[in-house]
Structure formats: C-alpha cells, structure tokens
Length: 86
Image 1 (cartoon, rainbow, N blue to C red):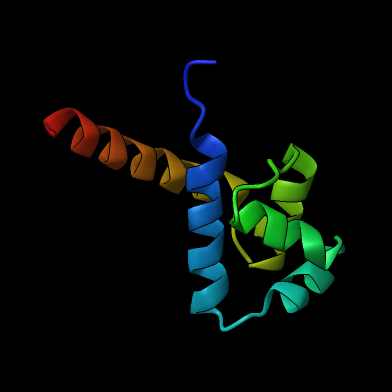
Image 2: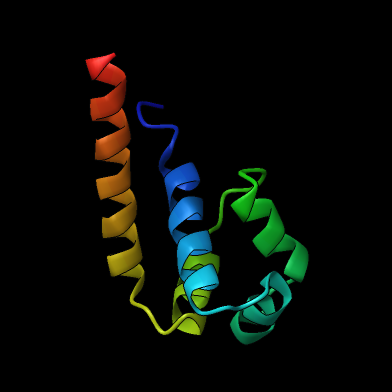
C-alpha cells in the first residue's frame, strides 16, 4: 500500500473537530450511532474506519465526509513535505 497514513491523518482531523465542538468520544459515538470504543480506537490509530463509520462520524459532527477527507489529504501533504525537507 502506497499511502498507509490516511487513516492516521483522518483520525487527527476527527479529533480536531470533536474537540472544537467540546464533544466527548462517548457523546460523538452516541450521535454517530457507533460503539464509543470505536471512536477511541480510531483516534488512537488502532482501527481504520469503514466508509460508513467515517460518514456517520462526519454527519454526527455536522460535516461532509468529503470535507474531512480533503482536510486529511492536506494534512498528509504537509506531513510528507516536512519529511522530504528533513
């Protein structure tokens, strides 16, 4: 797999928006109708969300999944530029 870090940067974006909204992992999970442990696993890079789970999380945050993915792609580009500059 060429880009192994998309789930990681998606998790960073997820955590950022969750914290901006002062939502707990449990509260977000309830709104997204998923197990609270899944939010924790995703944010700690222990699980990769399926598209359905990622979409549920985005909707629970009042965001478009495409916007979250675009932001994750931008974050990945920034990280890759930092790595190549070192």
